[in-house]
Length: 342
Ligand SMILES: [Zn+2]
Image (cartoon, rainbow, N blue to C red; front, top):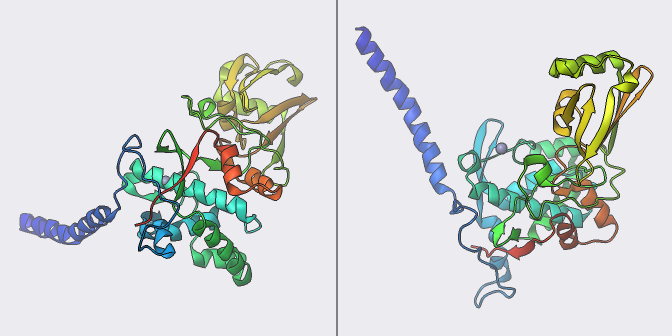
């Protein structure tokens, strides 16, 4: 009897699970052919003039034809790249941004998306976590956040940025680049090599002036000597930290992007990345100062600081740069090409 019940239970589970598995498999099969490795054949480039018999509307078709699988709020959905990018720009940028900064972000986000799909990240899906893939804000949430009037104005600018860069991506050596971006560098971007090791010729430090108005441009925190000591010793008891606080902080070695590469705290050497994690700092671009019983920490920028700074792009746009100049600045040595529509 028990065995029959178990068999019945298994059959019931299969009846429920099998269609779900087949659904997922079927959806994966629907993914457009972008699964080639990055080193695959050269990317096709769109001709400047529409081919004979082709309308301009048809040539502006890459983002509408390309499908993206997105996991958001625990659900899986498939949508055209154009709609996906609109949600990304809504989630990544504030509505005050200039149209050239938005267009630069559209190209970077398109390139990032296609490269993730090519490389089979999450088995062919993208998620809406900004720290993992890219932020993505659906229309109803964007409306709620901005109000209807601002939403409508912003949406027009976002969609215009996407459409006038339709199919445009950045390449290096004929392959899609790793188009990393972040909110604010604090004045200079960082080399990919300093964060992950391994040189990437187009992810090198560049100056990023004009970011002072960014919300996370500069963060100051003050620690009591006792709290600072406790945090350091919890992570690294060998640091010691005896004697007066003024003697705790040693010489700092910097990266080419201005971040902290190495610093001595007490008896131990810490990398900028490990100190960032221990003290919960926004980036590795920070200074430490001991005065009396207080340790002051000033941090500039936020995140890994590799690639395009969104607030730096906005500053360039306000200075008259167009999106191509912005992209060429933050991703040097790369080429902007246009992928053909369907
Ligand atoms: Zn992800």
